[in-house]
Every structure is written in structure tokens, then in C-alpha cells.
Length: 280
Image 1 (spheres, rainbow, N blue to C red):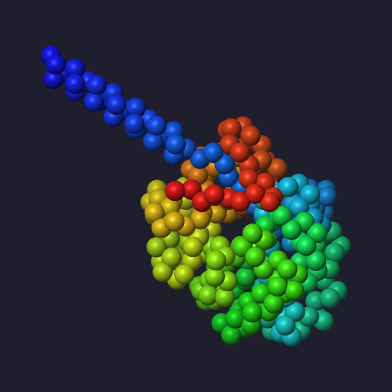
Image 2 (image 1 turned 120 degrees about the horizontal axis):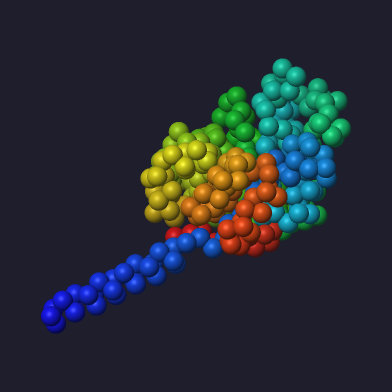
């Protein structure tokens, strides 16, 4: 009888401990990244990677605003997603040939200088800087060196102002080497978190379906102490699942909807100017 009582007590203690551990492990907060700025609204002009979209994200107070950087053949850094404009390869074409191109809201394609000048007005908004693939590693390396020069010029070259992301293994390695102490997240799912860590990355920015379909991905990254961002999540149910999973950042075309999801599930939104605590 005494043995049974002791066993019952031990079982109760074990269950209580497990419950406490479970509760402590639940995510309390997450951050929202506006994908190519908060463009999907009147204020953002419905124009991705525009200055208006960046300003809209800044004024809305989202933690971060993501943007894409390509370099022209004569060394101008442009905020543009694709590698080609009107059939012309950006890194093989001089900037002058793109000056007349207009975004959906009538803006010209922003240069990195123009983008950083706007960023400087609201420095608490984290710049989620994607270095795009270029046609050669040499061009990519020049683009990275010049980008860092520009960030320093605008006094934004700081881990609190910018994080780097890239699909390019070369760019990811060079960014990690050139910006020690910064968050550098590998964008591709072609390398597992452990492989990204071996490349020098301290974070992953993973396609949402990879996180949802591969139950080992998230714990592998966490075990390595890596930050976890996910893209591009536009479905509220998937947002809820990923927020509850514990991602540090969630990148979306619908940041206001993501804000509503966080409120609905009782999680705090890490807003601009607040540090994201990497979950253990």
C-alpha cells in the first residue's frame, strides 16, 4: 500500500513537472516581417519593393521590412526582386537603361541609397536585406561589399538595424564573414539547418511548407541555436500554426492579417525597436 502511494506521488510529480515544462515551452511572442514592404494596401501603393511600401511598413510598426537587392553592370544597387527587367539581365546592364521603368504606383525603381535614406527616417524598423543571386560569385561579392559601404554611410550597419538573407550559398557565406555578429539566415530548403550552420549561418529563413511538412526541421535549427524565419505565409490558418510552432519571425504579404492572428491566439507581437529573443 505504501509502495503504491509513493509510486502515485512520484507519478503526480512527474506529470506536474512535464506540464510545467510544456507550458514554459509555449511561444509567447513572434515578429512580423512585411514581405517587400507593406505594399498590399493603399498607403503602400500596391507596389512591391517601393519606397511607399517601406514607409507604410515603418508607420504600421511592423518589426521588419524585407527587400531585394540586385546590382547593375555599372555598380548601382537596385531594390528589385527579379534578375531581369524587360528581358534585360540587371547585372549585365547599366543603370541608365532602367531609369525610365516604373513600379505599379508610378515610382521609379528605388536605388539602395534612396531606400536607406527612407530607412534612416524610422531606424527602429529592421531591414531584412535579401542579397539576390547574381550571374557570378565575383559580381555577388562586389554587390555585398558595396551594400555594406552603403549601410555604413547611412549609419545602419548594425545587428539591431539589419539582418541578411539569401538563397545564394556564396552570398550567404560572404555575408556571414563580412558581417560577424549579424543575423544571417539561409533562405533555401536545399540545405538543412545543420548544413547552413556549417556554412557559417546563424539562422534559417525557411519556406513555410518545409516547416509544416518536415517535423525535424524546426527542432534541428533550435538545437543549433539558430533563429528561424519563414516565408511567405499568407494563409491565416498556416500563420497560426507557425506562430504556435515558435518561429522568431514570419514573413508575409499580409502583415496586418498576421497581426490579427497573433492577437487572436494571445501571443505578443514583437514590434519595431524591440529585440526578438531567440527561442530555446
